[in-house]
Amino acid sequence: MQIEKKDIRAVSKELLREFFVTQGDKAFRGNQVYEWLWSKGAHSFEDMTNISKETRTMLESNFVINHIKVDTIQRSDDGTIKNAVRLHDGLVVESVLIPTNTRTTACVSSQVGCSLDCSFCATARLKRMRNLEPGEIYDQVLAIDKESRLYYNHPLSNIVFMGMGEPLMNYNNMMKAIEMITSSEGLGMSPKRIMVSTSGVPKMIKKLADDDVKVKLAVSLHSAIDEIRSQIMPFSKNFPLADLRESLEYWYRKTKSKISYEYVVWKDINDNKESIDALVKFCKYVPCKVNLIEYNPIDDGEFQQASEDATNAYIKALESNGIVVKVRRSRGKDIDAACGQLANKQA
Image (cartoon, rainbow, N blue to C red; front, side, top):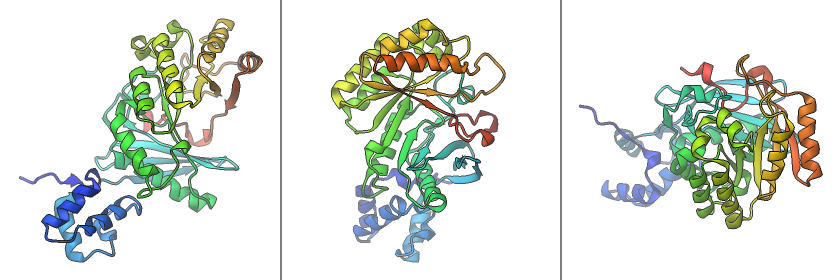
């Protein structure tokens, strides 16, 4: 019976050093391999050119590198780049490069499918197939960094966990990926350039605050009225707004970092004065800003973009109460590049 090989990126540098000693080699060989795996992003042991062929063959017989493969790349007229990312087991996730005049942002996935059941999201229709491993998250960032350098002549500047999946439901793997993204032995990016977007899991928001990672936090709010929010995000029945509010207050006390609320205004769902007033009230609990997001419909069903007048009413109410608000237009419409909307393309 063939023994399944361990992904070498699941092995710490210390254990790699010990492994080489047990093989009769020097411990520093583990440092070399670790550098190839993370800093240089090696996809195979053959890439490790400063390591002897015999050692590479030995590694090949003991380990695998479960790297991603960018199956297809689509470029939008607005410069957005969408990657269909195939994993080692054949499953597919999506990552997106979003350029502006001053920076490039990687939107990455954390799960295949999603643990939650938001009615408006295509990914939720897949259900969760599995969590992504730290290396698979890291690889998405590495691939987009290369694309940023190739197409925009500068390194990747920001990362948002807004692709497929709920990142706080894959917490340990997300944190390991962030550790390597921010490490001098990885990509060396500042954690302040990373935003974790959650649908709102209070217990895990508190844990993220306790772990003091220095990342930014975004919350997909979409309604500050429990009845409406639980209708469009059924899982939130278990996490009422009072609990979410308490966790966000905890987050701010611990981190002193403002929260970004992601908020879509839908026709006949939350495009009314009651919803506007509720959002204004909720925003006063914790220092924050609001991103009003243009909706990219997944079908002709109940979720349709609200009128410009409704969006403007939100902007006026928020600004008159001293709350920073921005309107985020959907990017890459011609290639359907809204993060987390790959459902109809999943193998």
